[in-house]
Image 1 (cartoon, rainbow, N blue to C red):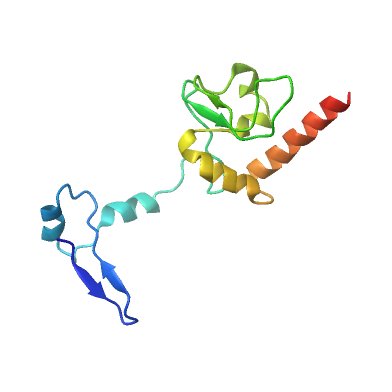
Image 2: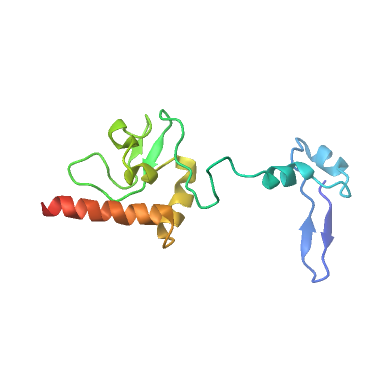
Length: 138
């Protein structure tokens, strides 16, 4: 059973043991021994060229992706369209649209980034929207 304790302000906390497969393993864990695996993982630097604000696009071209950009008339690009074979070939090299395809598990993160003024995806979304308006005006 997980061990519980109360802090000075009366808040109840429960010890959670990562990688414990059964409740018995969790109960046998020594709370005085820190779980350093999680700390070591978070202390590792980002892969080269990736920053905390850099969006994570779908890396495998055959993975399912969702388009989070503005809908584009006359194309297959509609907001939240799902592409089961990855980013369509004609948009892989597009400097703006390529940042608007995300893996399904990153959809919430991408939507939050689009809403955050000044972020890369917010800028790409606005630029894509402007490009579409200028094409429609022609």
